[in-house]
Amino acid sequence: MKATGVVVEYNPFHNGHLHHLRETRNATGADIVVAVMSGHFLQRGEPALVSKWSRTRMALEAGVDVVIELPYCFATQHAEIFSRGAISLLDSIGCESFCFGSEDGDIDTFEKTVVFIEANRERYNTYISGFIREGMSYPSALAKAFQTLVSGDSVIDLSKPNNILGFHYMEARNQIHSSLKAYTITREAAGYHDQHFSSPSIASATSIRKNIFSSEGDHKIDSYLPSTSVDQLTQYQLEYGGFHRWENYWTVLQYKLLSSSKEELKEIYEVEEGIENRMKECVKTSTSFEEFMTKLKTKRYTWTRLQRMLLHILTNTRKEEMRHRHASASYIRLLGMNKMGREFLHSKKKEMPLPLISKLSSANQSEIELDVRAAEIFSLGLKNAAARKKLLHQEWSQPPVMI
Image (cartoon, rainbow, N blue to C red; front, side, top):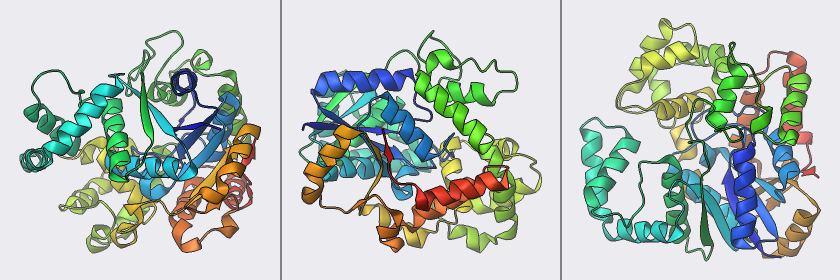
């Protein structure tokens, strides 16, 4: 069976994802689609709207054949490390290709861009370092460095979020010497960060989540999601009493910031350049996560970068324990599959260079510790104690979802 991979968060799975899934099958001719999906916390340093198990079910019901988890040590990182973890897992599980959505939509241009950057790596890195010293954020420095190097229109625009991710996916493929073939699908209608609905059927996950949490929202999101996703959201709300967002964790984060010394905060992964001093000051006068972030944000530190720092503080993820974890994936955790997916895994299992984990108890506990800790913290986002207990128990008791 021919398999292709997609890198996803599905927060939640919407019509744009469905379009990408269908076009991926058409473009690659694959029999099997494997989704490597972020767990309970996401690349922008946010909690997922619903658990990874609920999002796995959304994916399988929409046509994905296998869902595996992108571990915390990759899922909550900047694009380069995020991509390295995801592509290495798709390569290890036996995919022949991968397909991503992009603003550009032309894979040849991506290939040329990767070659161009590699040929100019030293100058590129020098420009990045210089722009950061001038006070630019890391993403802005990347885009500016690229624009400084490039002349003409034969390379992609690396100021656009999906183009950036696609570039790093292909760069990661080359770095691990993988034979995975790359495909890209033009992103439809809504932009990655669009805050509002601008199409009758396709909306960004950002705008969908904003509508769900808005007190003034009409909550009419049904036309932007497959009915199976709507059903999963409804069931999750009934079963667990609500959805997850940063505000749910504010009091826990506030406690962590107030009770930790500056020296302790400096040991947390990604906390650097004295930002812990600003955190300690801002937390004293803030009454919500939104207010705290607004006070904390500077030109140098993007909202996303700060959220990732705060997430690592929330989960007590220290620099030392992350030092070697993101070099490469060391296990494949299976979250769900359908019948075709099960047949594919059965045919590939003996060839996989990494252990395939379907039961948490069978995993190397030191390797999977961060994922377990993330699940424990994620459960604190629920108000009801019984719901928290149920969700936490699921981390150990839930077998792979079967559709």
